[in-house]
Image 1 (cartoon, rainbow, N blue to C red):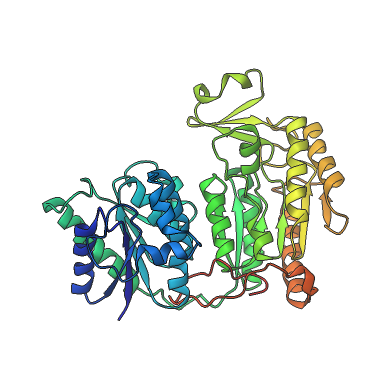
Image 2: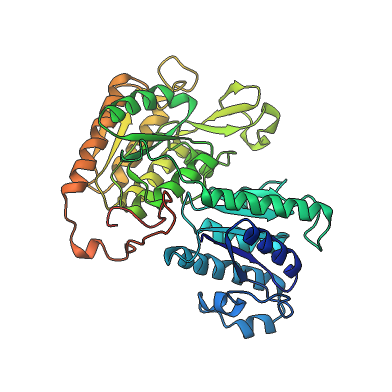
Length: 436
């Protein structure tokens, strides 16, 4: 019988958690109550106690609650749940997870869910589900289910919604993806409107070579999701030709993917091709949203809701240093391709963002900071020229072949996580990579 973890604070949400557990049992699945409360005694007997969850992270639970700091308790139990719940999945003790709560419960529940692989069923019933959920969902496939009313005692609205939530998680656990097309190895790629021609042409070549290509829109959330999928272990290679999110992170645009962008390929030890696609632009909303400190800069109105700003020589030089620092840490075969005639569709000669000095500053920083054993190939074409796409696809296929043939010395594999067997068919392990 499929088992679904039902996670929450059983000192404050015992009645609601008990109800949803009963609904899951009524639908033919087995609930496993996981207590993450830190207040008074639990109001319902849990299958896994709060002390057991805390111990997963080496937390002295008694000392934690004795300090009576709610914020510290929530943060500690979120970290503990993120360590404990994936262990349940790895040991095939659960097939899905449902959590419910307000602010604290949502923080703890989604922390556990973000530590689970993509494809593992996750549902969060939350009072916060109608707001900005980016911090809770991250790059994972977490379903946020609005509670509508506060999770504070059962009533006609909450009973209805918790019953629906139970049905949703049971359906997610029961559903298995169709087997067709799942035998092809996967390549992930980053794309923007200004690099669409490049990625589309490269994708066709890679698909003809037998790969399935998953394309992510480099809009901040897209980059985070791509990084999470790389971590999951599904991918065999990375075609990261649109690294524009780093321009937003550095300069202060609205589409940053955070400082860990470009880290996942290193952690998973995947072969990669990297290009500085759209590092010539920073993204803002409508013109009135551009901060006053950027007055006098070069802008391009992409559409009524998107205003692009050209990166300067100094910004490009720093972006080159950052990319080099990230790529120097890669373990698997990696190639950087640089399009000397433009980093985007609007960065080509004659287009609004053509700035050979800024592009040259980016290239010089890459050359100055890259390790000598990292190939840097400069092509005298724009990023959307068909020959650049062909070069990207060819370099990635060569790197994948080299990665399959190469045996790295033991000292370079130190710290790479061991392979773990996840229980749910079709889910993607967050630690499976080159050495998995």
